[in-house]
Image (cartoon, rainbow, N blue to C red; front, side, top):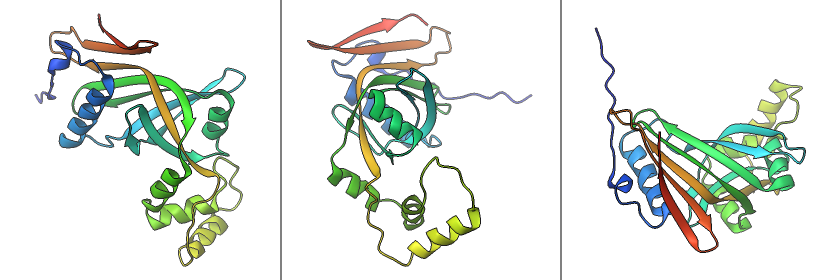
Length: 204
């Protein structure tokens, strides 16, 4: 019989919570990278349309700032339109390799165009070419033509399309969850108030 034993790391934050959650967020992401977590910077991002209907998708976190996360998208995509409509977001990431989960939420602010330019240039050439070719989330009528047009762009300069933008996911609430062998799974929640961050341990 094969027993699947996964490493469980329970950090000191569940005994003495840090005053600020963002440094802890950085530490957890760094630990995920160090432990060879698959896709450590991927989160499930949920947005809400003006009619109150939510939608979700997986996105890549480019940066962690002192206020939250930076992601990119086409402004014409569903998530781009919903961000423009309500400016609300929530997200979750789960790392199976470390038995950890982070849930967070808050509001969205546009990131500086200069930052979007930097992140655009960091993308692989083929990804830039495809992003410059497609109208994200619109119906695809001719795949062969789309691929040919993207291939043609590889031979040309690839400036950032105006519709390809960066967003700052400002965090106003975040919860750190850690599985525990004793079934008392550790939960640490932070909320941003007018006086700063508050924290509380939660029952599993």
